[in-house]
Amino acid sequence: MNNPGQFRLGKPNEVEKLKKYVLCIAMLSCLILGGFGWAEAADQDTLTIGNNSYVPINEYAIPGKNPALILNTVKHFENTHPQLEIISWSIDKEQRAYVTARFVYGIFIHHRPKK
Image 1 (cartoon, rainbow, N blue to C red):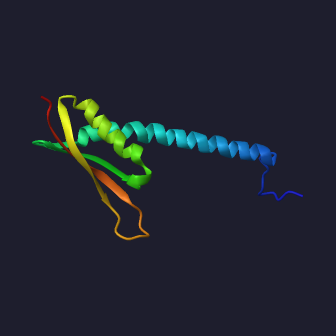
Image 2: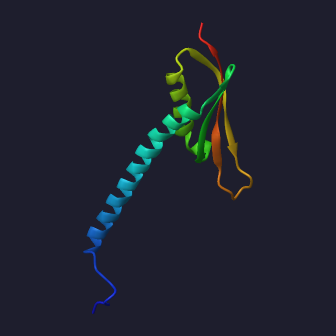
């Protein structure tokens, strides 16, 4: 006997397929929106003074577990500034306590003109 406020979506196997489909769509949307949107925002917000630049990321992330985020940011900077040679870079991050979320503010990039 069904409860009037309750509905049945389908067989359990169909529900699991639907959950996986929705999860895949959500993950793909995050990759598309987040993966490409940060690059454009970073271009607009990059601060360069002399031979030093700061590229903002502003993401909750653990740098060691998200190397693609960091390395893609550096690679994007290299691609958009072919006239510059990167000397070094460092991550601007914060974690106040062991149980708090880690946050990556951005990357400091030290560079010089290519010879």
